Length: 252
Ligand SMILES: NC(=O)c1ccc[n+]([C@@H]2O[C@H](COP(=O)([O-])OP(=O)(O)OC[C@H]3O[C@@H](n4cnc5c(N)ncnc54)[C@H](O)[C@@H]3O)[C@@H](O)[C@H]2O)c1
Image (cartoon, rainbow, N blue to C red):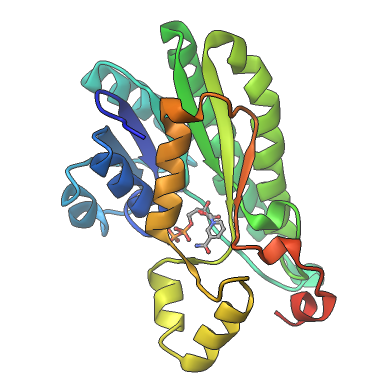
C-alpha cells in the first residue's frame, strides 16, 4: 500500500477522520493537499507535511476551482477523498428546512461536485481513485438520523453509479462507511466511563475505531492494491451493523 508519487486531495482535513486520512496518506508517501473551511486545523495538518487550503466545499464553484488549482500546483491528481461532512441528529418531526438544506449541501451536493471535478481531471489522465465518506447509517440507522442517513445513503448510491461512469476511464470510486470513530469529540465523550462502556458495547471486539484505522482503509482504496474494488462500500463498523438488536438501536 504505497502512494509514492501520487497526489491526493482530502476535504475536511483539519480535524477528525479527514486529518487521520491526510496523515495516513502522507505516511504512505503521497503528496497531500487538505481542504478545510476552518483554519483551526491548519497547523495540525501542516505538521503532517500536507498542504493546507481554506476551501468551503459548499461553495461549489470555489470548490471546483480549488480542485483544479491543487491539480495544477502538484502537476497531477491521483486521489480525491470527499470526507467533509456534518451530522445533525434531531427528532424526525422537528427537523427544519434549514437543517435539511445544510445536510444536503454539505454531505451530498459537495460530494457530487468533488467527484465530478476530480473525475474530469482523472478521466483525462486515464487513472485515479476517489474515496467518499459515507456512514454505517447508509444501511442501518436509528430515529433522528433521517436527514443524515439519507445523505449518506445518497453518497453510497452515487458512488455505485460513478464506478460505471468513470470505470471505463480508468478511475475507481469507492466509499467507506464508518460507524462511531474516535475523533476529538468522541475521545472527549469517552473520558466519561459510562460513555466509553456504552460505545464499546456496540462493537464485536469492544474497541472503538480510530481515525488512523480509517486512514489505513483510505490509503488501501487509493492505492493500486485495491484495483479490484470499484463501486464498493467498505463497512468499517467492527461488526455493529451485522447485529440484529432492535432494542439497543432504538435506545442509542
Ligand atoms: N466520526 C464518526 O463517528 C463518523 C462515523 C461515520 C461517518 N463519518 C463521516 O466521516 C466524515 C468526517 O467526520 P468527522 O467525524 O471526522 O467530522 P469532524 O467534525 O470531526 O471533522 C470534519 C471536518 O470537516 C470540516 N468541514 C465541515 N464542513 C466543511 C465545509 N463545508 N467545507 C470544508 N470543510 C468542512 C470541519 O471543519 C472539520 O475539520 C463525515 O463525512 C462524517 O459524516 C464520521
